[in-house]
Image (cartoon, rainbow, N blue to C red):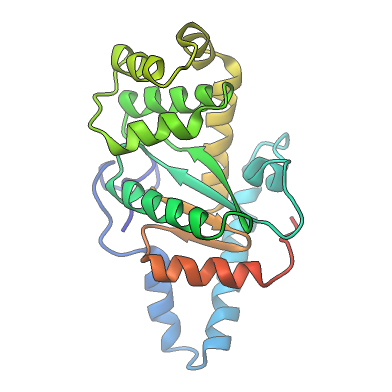
Length: 235
């Protein structure tokens, strides 16, 4: 399941859940073309490569894909997971719990890189800016956890109150939220989402595997274990 659509990607209103993943429909179509799993994987990979090549041409030249997606602090043998989320997306809330479980089960095997993708208007944008700004003080996980796991009306006063509760420098946070640097990161996230064809949230890039929508924990765990058994991705 996927929350929302980006403006210009379809006629549905933002915030309406998509009943079926586009990628799942492709899998269903491929079953009639290729009976063997290996053939289906090759066909799906070909479709994804074509789409990514088309979308990548629209990304500003200043963005180098792998560092923009996974950051520059990778370690040998650690699988990077880029996570695109929206604070008001219920599927993101469910997936976030599974990601927390995954990171607890495999603390040395995976590295989570957060990408804020606000798609539900000003309140989502405000919360996303606060999250990105909190990262500059090393408290993004704590702030996100409070946002995602407690009822929150995302307005400036409530956001700053939560920030103060977890020990953030509120004045610095407010200044960073309005900075060009935070805007640049949000713009970069939207550009990356375009590259991978994300029509909404949640979105995941686990090594070489791209997923858009909520998935069961058993499938998530199988994918990450498969990625961990392969060499690091190269862009």
